[in-house]
Length: 131
Image: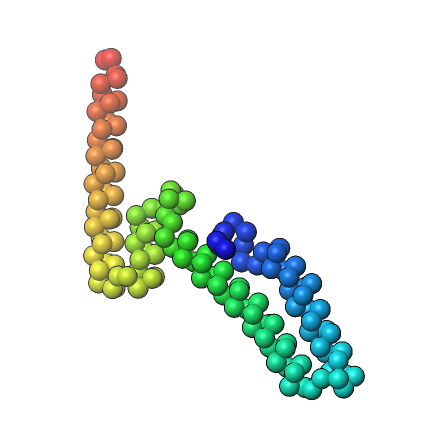
């Protein structure tokens, strides 16, 4: 079963199964425990297994969604190079020294591009001016 991040962490299907089967079984075994038909250990084990099963399913979905989101950069076209650099630093892929060095390079490159755009704009104004 593939993980679809668009559905969210807990899907309607998961919630339905938890309510219809998980909660019903817990209530049934709890009733049997209260009436003395099953032991406390059976009630605790049954409840624990159901909760652990659904918790494992949620963790599995969470990891799948994180894996998809961390590898899929095509859905984030507005992510700037500085945002990417921050992400790499936060993920531990870069040391503080590497982060600072690359950040300085990006800032220098950005300033150079801004300066050349400004000069090009002045030239076009001069060329457009008929006087």
